[in-house]
Length: 317
Image (tube, helix red, strand yellow):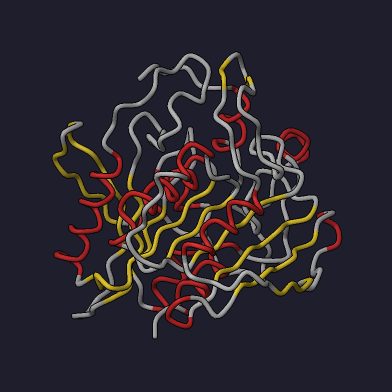
């Protein structure tokens, strides 16, 4: 895969600071995570893991980094590792090849050839490894990621959803050409999180033939259509409720709406967090003014790791 990367996405994912509100849980310490390697058809590949002491079985959260990122960077940008220690769940963060996931869209970054990496197989192997070595609960495996990681989470759910209990996509939309072949194999409770002012993955979706950075892009469902698609797959009712969450930090220029469809199959729920006037950043991170002008504002009303774990935990019954 070619090494060329969009300067815009590099700025987005490599320069994001990990600082957040003081009342949010601490972000993860990548230096405290365990690095593992495994042989795959694509060569030796890495993943970070935070095991839990004891015999378990323990829930497993698979965290997928965004494009241009790696596992260490996403580890430092989320509170999931901190919550994992206190709530007793395992966090595993695989590394994509060349800082990118083969999420089924083909080439979406100028200069890159479409990836041929078997990321479905690799993530499946990581899940199996954690279950075998760390007493992971095969009936409580969750997946989530932002941007390219969110696209990969949806691709994995559509292809290997039988391995999951629930999933989440953030600042990403479902590619239209993947919808017809999406067969999770079971009802998966789902969480979507998107910003209405996202300049990279449009909240309203993307028509076929759109060109960015000289590269033709795939058609994308809107954020609302993406959520509706997975909520339908989860057996949720068509009606949904909506509430405006407390605007705890009015300085960030954004606010969060939570839409809910319930009860879904098995008594679960599916949730849609809409960050009004939010950009291509998961809530709870702080960014400087330069990055903010490029990718939109960073909401400080909710902590993304807390939102994810609260949702995943709600399915454990």
